[in-house]
Image 1 (cartoon, helix red, strand yellow):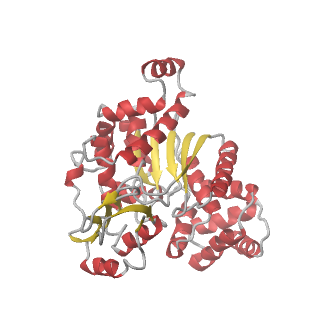
Image 2 (cartoon, one colour):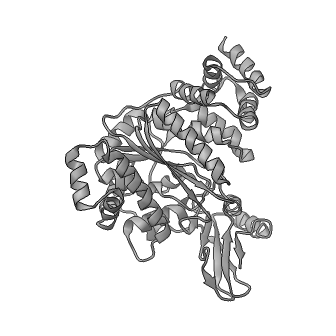
Length: 423
């Protein structure tokens, strides 16, 4: 019965008709139990990409995704932060989570693997520790540390989403509605009730236009209200990565450098992370005790300054070490211990100039050719970013790979995927 209803629903959606909850639940149920198969799953993903969903369908999709998988429950304020992605080299989650956890709030972070980028947060965190845990293991980690950074697919959270991701990845196909449903379903399933959504837009990221970003923001807010979730959607124009490393190990090294507060840390990444952590702390403080609110107002003036203090005093680094240890990793690891792939190639400046643009999509494609995210040590390190000057023979960026073959392929592809544009 469910199989027949699911097939009829896919046929209906392919012709542009609207689906009710029973039809959407049937499709999600069949996908989550891997009964639909990749071809029919692809048809459903493609129908959503081409025809779109109305607000009711988006709510039904999210609800069905949650109800066909497992859910976690935590008491009180449960924080989360999520970026819609598409900006390689901007690994703020690995900085925001330990800051918020060190502030005393619960932040069980369910992360995804890469879809369109050369590394998702789960791929990056796996450089430091395992990320695949069941429900009971996650409860134990969070009880010890207030937080975690785990792969959502390890808990059977919204399992239909992971099957849809598998069919979307080869074509880099991911609709705005699918992004929305995927994120909110996993937040609700993980028990999150105070969430900040990082929504970048720009020429070289997933959302190109401000109008599209504003529409997506309104849809996020609609879903948050339907699920009784406190949410802040932060729109910002993005022209380049916040860090300089692209690929799991290189992005993780950048995040650790910020937590370690060394001289070589990427200040853009630090600034972006503190903004998001500050917004999330302010959101949580609104529902915290008046005693805590008054104390933070008196000592710091607000969430951003509180987050900056937690980072500067080393409390965020200490908390990250606790999380790494609780997840079975080496808590003593330092950024200097993370060495990229042994096969490397420096792209050298032919003349003196200034960087005008960074093409994040091309950088992502090159990093994938280099082997990321499967090869965690593969990727790109940007020596120069927008507005930075350079002289002849100075390195602009370095390609790294674990494979000599992948490096050769990337070098041969440089003319097809230019990473930098100049003045």
